[in-house]
Amino acid sequence: MSLTDIIYGLGEFLTWSFQILPILGNNVNWLIILVGASMAAWWISKMIAFDKEAAQNGTLP
Image (cartoon, rainbow, N blue to C red; front, side, top):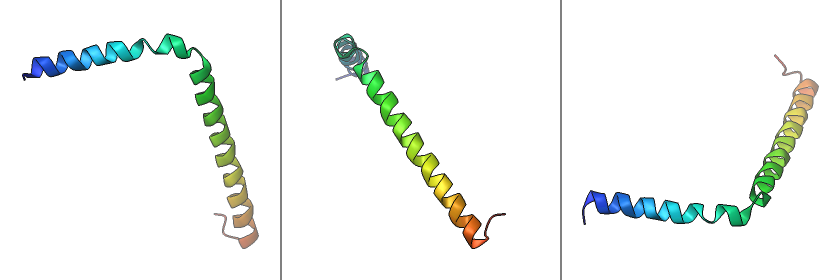
């Protein structure tokens, strides 16, 4: 097995895997957007909570 066989095999696999994308449509995109937005909201809420805790302890710079 040569490197060329590996490269062509990888290329054929990637070409095949891209055929799945039109079937999925925009649902996957919306899922990623929702997960990212919810994680960002959680992160911001944690930052606000840590800021309040630091203000109570007097450890703000």
